[in-house]
Length: 353
Image 1 (cartoon, rainbow, N blue to C red):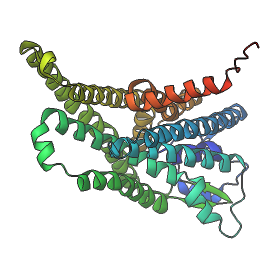
Image 2 (cartoon, helix red, strand yellow):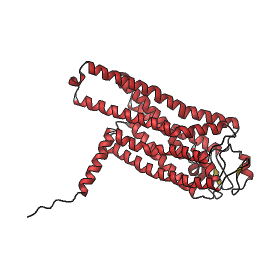
Image 3 (cartoon, rainbow, N blue to C red):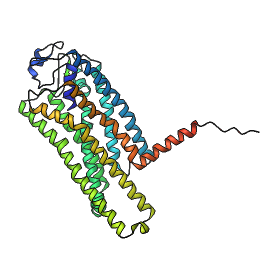
Image 4 (cartoon, rainbow, N blue to C red):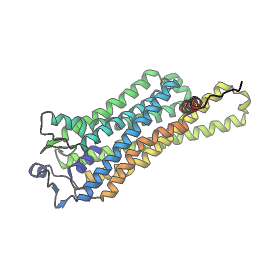
């Protein structure tokens, strides 16, 4: 999704449906779509937007990398494989995002040898799109896993195996890559030394079908999964709390069990917040992309367009802070690092003879 939008920004195309035949006959210095010519102010906005996304990518890479370290240090990466995989996918997305936008800012001439492959692998943001889609698949898998462990604990303990969890984590990478690669390869090309990603569709019908399928698969269905399963989780937790209160469970429960329930609750709160933030931040860009693929003459103000994409990308920077605040094991590692740093920086006490 971001690939096509980025391609339009970098090449100066107006935000309407693009006719590929016009790209073949239009020089890169005077590109138009219909009768619209991109203004210099929109190009300036594109430049500043891309610079901002590079910053988001760098900050997001550092923040997600720190969370990965905290999970390994607290030995939570083996206990919570899908959550670790979620941060790994976000980390990879930030890396690819910053690399792609930096390469686009360089305005590389792709008429040289290898330009087509550079377009597919970097300038199109295909790798970043694949890990982004993988993160959505993984978020859905985490939601279902939490549902089974909370609502059906006996079934989860009996049927849910480690190989299933690792398979789900692997499928997130494979599924996201398969969708992004297949679409990017078949709809991208280099024209007049410029990379156009997700532009060359076989027909308008195919483009419309993909836009509707993409919106339903990676937004509507994901949203319904969040709503249904987390609602059932909250109902189950409230029921369990009432049962424990009625039987005076506080006196009979052991400390390890209490600690386990506390971690379970923090995980659920963390993943619910991550899911809500995803829906809020990516809804504008997802809806815009759907409209772009359905209506051939759909247009939007550049300021609103940049704001929608910026908010979506900002989601990658918000997640690490959510894990730090809400996920107990990660928070303990962060507090430990801060305390250790303050202790090491404290001046040594000098005793008088």
